[in-house]
Length: 217
Image (cartoon, rainbow, N blue to C red; front, top):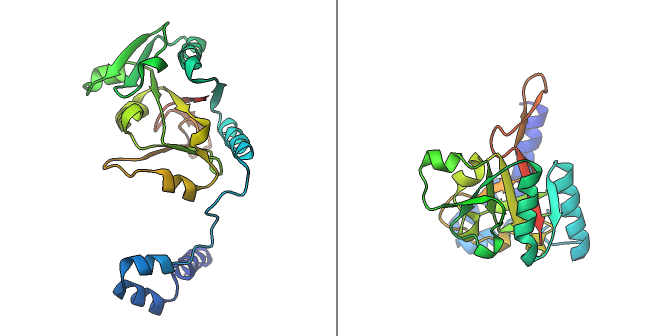
């Protein structure tokens, strides 16, 4: 067995407990067994909320995301400005996005179960999110209400995501506790979609939007 593989499997064994303990946990009440699992990773915040926000912003910038700061009333202008900077004129929005978020200077198309072609035409999509994770610089979408369906947020070239400061937490554990686990997919976003080929040529937009604008309220 390779050293790396051994290290991975050994870590899993230590996290779950010894084999005998695992067999015992399977036989006992599921809730009791779940509570017995050792959790040595960070589960709660160690920073005040302002420091958490600064860490989140730093991670987003490091991933080449665009940040805009405004209040609720300034969302339409922020969206207009983000689209104008790239010469974009058509915006796709989920049916749950509030009218108060809609920009005034571009065409808006509501995603009311649109078929593929009209869903692909807008180069920009506007959505909300469930939670932001500062530690990893991740935005989580559960695709309910103002977050729309997953296809809409993956097909567009530019994703504009509205994030309330109160939605940002430090750790993944805190984020999981806030999620509602609807019946459907969950999307995690860490900056614009990008990948590198065997020659390390970086290409954007392969698996999702090539641009990400975070509108921080």
